[in-house]
Image (cartoon, rainbow, N blue to C red; front, side, top):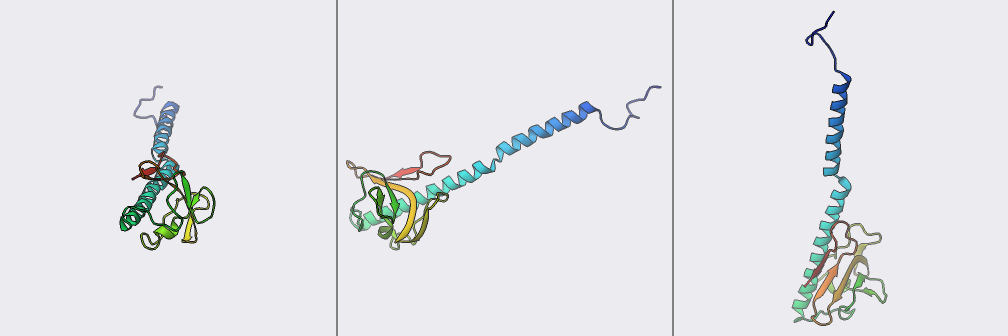
Length: 156
């Protein structure tokens, strides 16, 4: 006896496999589109852009108040990239007391670098670098911990 299509109940194996395949493809596309690790990395890079802009604005304000000369107890901004930290060292620059509290209440630091912090002007590690071009005097602030956008730096 022949069973008509209207009387048949359930799904065939082919139909089930096609639906499972379509769901797998859609799930894969969704996971790639909403890659949470990449989204968090982009958010941290956006924070780094904002941080170096804040630091640069404070440096420019210091320059403006002092008629174009950056005034700091640590001396002039080095001509080679120096890490902004309170720790003494040949490749470090203690910029904190020159910016806070006059130009920034607290100076922002890298959002995900190990050890990056701001406690006070005597205890901080921003994990950003600063350098001054010896010829033009232009100042560059760099975020070496950038994850997605490379490089993240600002020159003025």
